[in-house]
Length: 130
Image (tube, rainbow, N blue to C red; front, side):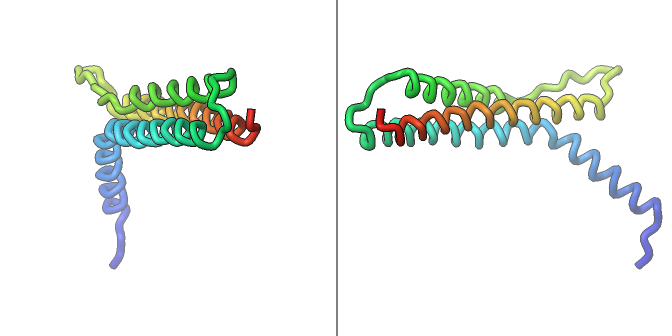
């Protein structure tokens, strides 16, 4: 089987069209997943701090842990909101796609940093015994 340049161009064009169509839905799916991870982490630390620490207290480290995890939940909820594209005659699909992907990357990095810091503060709280 010999592949011609036209076949490659056609398949790349079809792939790009599908990717542009599915771009906004990946933000929703990631948001749902991240929300589940964030709320699961909050539940884990609530349980562990209740049973693993001698006397559960709301000190600065615990409040910071839960605050960061709560903000990561809010970022995940924001990601789960469906993205709406207003179609008009001057809309450039590829630039709109790039804007969506850039926002997904920024939100992913932000969520991960918030979650990681909250997780680390929770682990520090658990193992410090304070």
